[in-house]
Image (tube, rainbow, N blue to C red; front, side):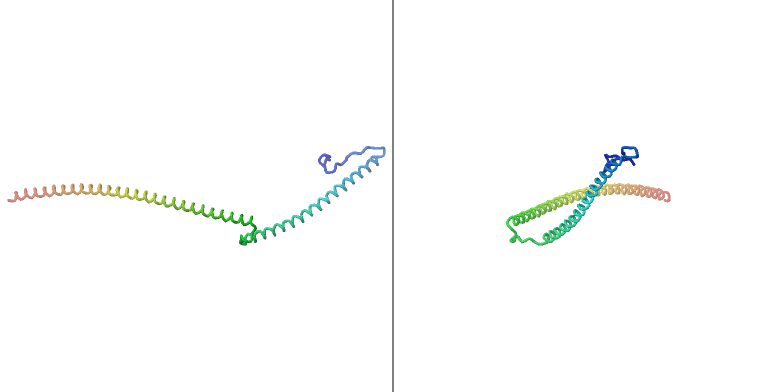
Length: 183
């Protein structure tokens, strides 16, 4: 692991000047003393940060408890009906404005409901008219189809009558011829 003084929390010195019997003792002692001082500062900062974190955590808990109590109180107050006589003038005015706004909202809702009902009735009338027109068209188509069938049936009946008359005339003619041959 390489030591980079720009990224380390405490820059570490990795070299010492060489003397005849090893490293320079004063230089090593100075380095260790500096390092111990830095470690004491870092330890003190850590301890202070931990203490601050604990204090903030306990403050957070108390603020959360206070917030829950305030929300419970607000909920209880919101459920209690407001008596305008017991309110100061400003709050009474706010209640009056809210009441007026409520009436406006109800009136607007009623007007929209009337408009929707009117549109629905208008659409129902239009659909009834369209249905009546389609019904009349179907009746006319039925009447025309029945007239055409009746005319076809009458033609077929006339043709059958003509065929029957021709057959009857033929039979009568044959009977007359036979009657003439017998006499």
